Structures are given as structure tokens and as C-alpha cells.
Amino acid sequence: MEGTWIPVLKKGVYLRETAGAYLLLLPEGYMELDEVAWEVLRHCDGRHDVEAIAQAMAERYAGDVETIRRDVVEFLTDLRRQGLLEFRELAS
Image 1 (tube, rainbow, N blue to C red):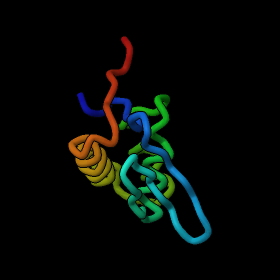
Image 2 (cartoon, rainbow, N blue to C red):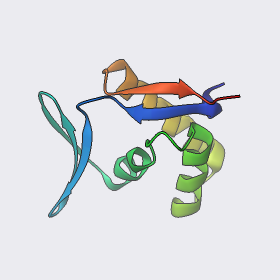
Image 3 (cartoon, rainbow, N blue to C red):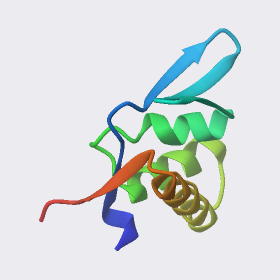
Image 4 (cartoon, rainbow, N blue to C red):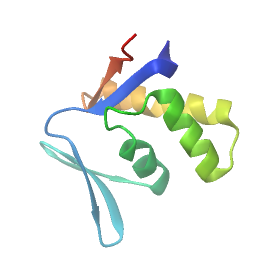
């Protein structure tokens, strides 16, 4: 179940905040992130599952948790397809 997936940035992929920009540093360059993407990825630390990330974003941005959960899953799945993060299963 995707709610229990724990997203983690892959080796060589890092977050960096600079003056006026949120960056996802990649081995071959970088991606500039908006504030929401930055907040989602800050939670991809191996301690938060997708459900916890969606809850945190719903609280921060006062949104519908179901809609936010779908958006978070879509965003993280896209990054996984690009080889930038992986999902670990929540240990039973």
C-alpha cells in the first residue's frame, strides 16, 4: 500500500536551499523546486511514510488530505521513475 511507502532520496541526490531558491541537486545538474515540492522532499528522510507526508502537507497548507495524498504519490512516483528516489516498505 502506497501510504506505508517510505520515500528516500537516492545516493547522490540532495536538497539544498540557497538565497531565493530551493534546489534538488542531482549527479548531472539540479532541479529548481517550488515551496511545496521542497516541503514534501524535506520529509523524504527515511523516517516518514507517504501517509505522514500527506498529513503534514494537509496541515501546513490547509488542504484536503485525500487530494494532497494523490498529489504527493504522483510527485514522488514521478521522481522514482526518474531514478531520483526509492520507496522502502514500512517494516512490520
